[in-house]
Length: 219
Image 1: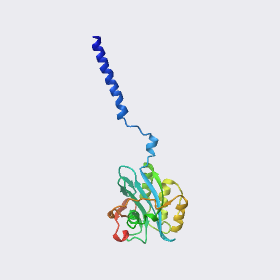
Image 2: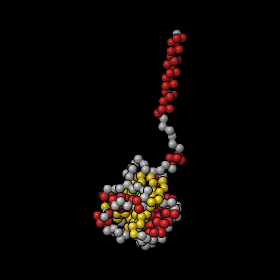
Image 3: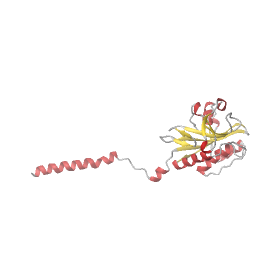
Image 4: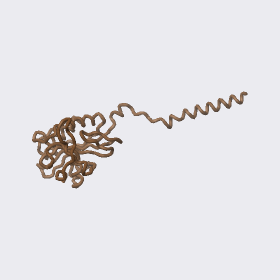
């Protein structure tokens, strides 16, 4: 009888020990709430390039999706692992003055001008990305001497970094401002979108929507 009891106890102890080891292999470590909150879901880059010194140039933002699911950047949904550029245009486009998505990402890549782009970047968590997206959704869809491409890009950048950049309209000054604040030349990699993913923002407010940009605009 004692031998039988010992066998039963041995089996019970073995089972208990076996199950007590399972969590060590199966349990996923918990991510602290603060660390999860600050996890980077996207990288925001402030970019500028001068084409004819010192008066012809362009300034824009680029957002790269670092997560494993789509993210919303203003009116555009960015698939995982891809990115989107956003800027305002005037005389150089044929579809109307205002906000465009992916012109820079498409043209700087296809025209092999990435080595001329100056940029600086910041990581964004989910909350900061939402702030940026809402800023894009509510930004006036226009270009003007009081609200040119640099004004737009600085407004987006300042909304999440609080750096306080301001536009003085001249591209050379814009580039110099970025240079002295840590921007680097030729280091940015922008995802090159398909031609059909270059859009103009049409309309204002709740009625705003994306329309495919014309061939002239992306040429």
